[in-house]
Length: 254
Image 1 (tube, rainbow, N blue to C red):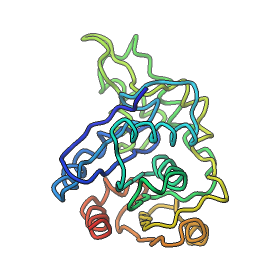
Image 2: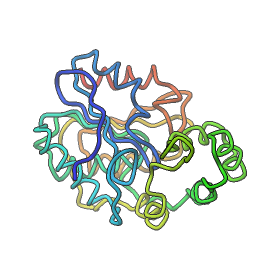
Image 3: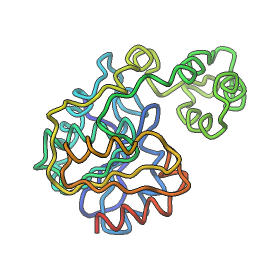
Image 4: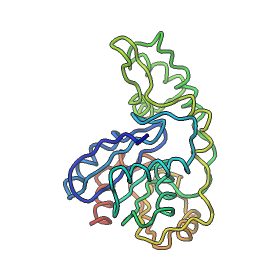
């Protein structure tokens, strides 16, 4: 089983990995901009997300293995790899395991350390969606608002809704497996993880995902890493300040 992707443009391969409960298409606008720089951008859906396959196993080892299989299937090497949040951890582990496939690594708003589970309200809200009664995205948003107060987060989650048939809605994500394995998303990466090639860590100035204390760990495992802060942005820094995010990535990869 090969991961689903949306491939945009021609040129040097550039893979983007989305975060937890996201999908590759969340990055479509930026992908078009990167493709204009001479890159073939692969917006990959990780397992149990988007249009990729569902499976009961879910941890960073299998996510990295999925990406290796994807690269083999598409004959990809010498690539730029960008991952956000959960996708950033997949990218870090993949880079350490297969450095020969990567020219540059970009990690968006995540460090290799452990993060406690903090998606409880979101998971409860998604589990509360009864599509035998809910027939529109608007109705789904009203239900989600009982659990998720932030409108932007609700819109992000609602992108997972699709029509199974003209009259029936459903979720693309494998909610049951993701809820069971949600603790895996915050797991620390192996302490001996190491990647020597050019690496850029981007963090939002309003986000707490990469702290000052995290920088020592990042430098230990990624000795060449540069940590840069994106202004006026939280955890979804690529969506909250796309211009500065794009410019920072552009400077690094070109």
